[in-house]
Image (spheres, helix red, strand yellow):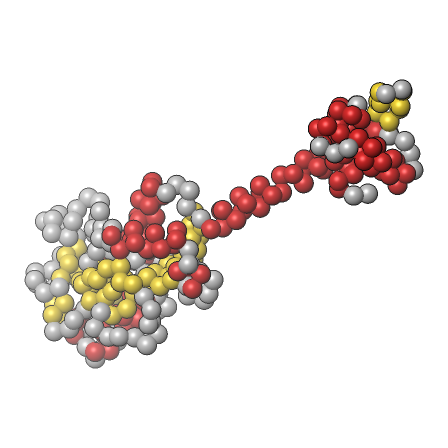
Length: 296
C-alpha cells in the first residue's frame, strides 16, 4: 500500500462518488478507479459496494476509513510540528551562566516582556560545552589567554561588605591585608568571582579564613547581608544589599568599603559560540544585556 493510495481511498470514501472524488483530487477518474482497484487487490477484499454509478463503503471500507483517519491526520500534522520545533529551537537561547546570575536573571525577565516568544535554558556548570551564550567574569587589569573573543557587558568595582558591628565598621576604606583574621563568606571555588578574589588574596599574601561557602550567589548574598561575616560584593551585578535598606542606610547591618592599595575590579563578559553568533536572537539578547547592564 502506498500513502497516495490511502489518501485517494479516504477522499473517495468521503464523497462516495468516483467522479466527484477525482475532481477534488484533480486527477482523471479512470486513474482514481485504478488506484482503488489496486488497493482492494493488495488488501484482498472489496472496500466499496458498487451500484450502477454510485458507490458505498462496505463494512471493510468503513473499518479501513476509521483506522486511517487518525493516522493520515497525524501524518499531515508532522510538517507543521517540525516547523514549530525548528522555530522553538531557533528561539531558545542556551545560556551558560557563570557570573552575575542575579543580574542576568533580572534581565531575562525584562527581555521576556519585549520578546515573549524567546525561551531560555540556563546552565550553571562550566562543564557544559553546548551553549549559545556564556556569561563569565575576568579581572579588569589582567588580560587572560583563556578568553580572547568576548564582549564586555559591564565593568564594576568589587567592594568588601563588612558588618557595621565589626572592627572594620567605622572605616571608609580598607586594605585587604588587614582582613586576614576575619571570617569570609565566599562562593565556591569553581566560580569565576572566587577565582578572581583568590588572586587578590594571593597578592595580599594571605589565605582567607572561609567560614561559609556556597555554590549559589543568593545564599552568599543573604549571609553577607545578614552581617554574619565579610565578603566581596560587586558594585552593580549583585544589586542592593537588602530590599529594606541600602549599604548607606544607618540601619544597615552591613557597610560596603572600597578596597585600597589594590585594583579590585572585574568585567562581566559575554562569549558566543560559533552557532550563537549566527543566531540573530542570541545577538539581540547580547545587545540588550550591554544596553541594560546595570541594576535597575
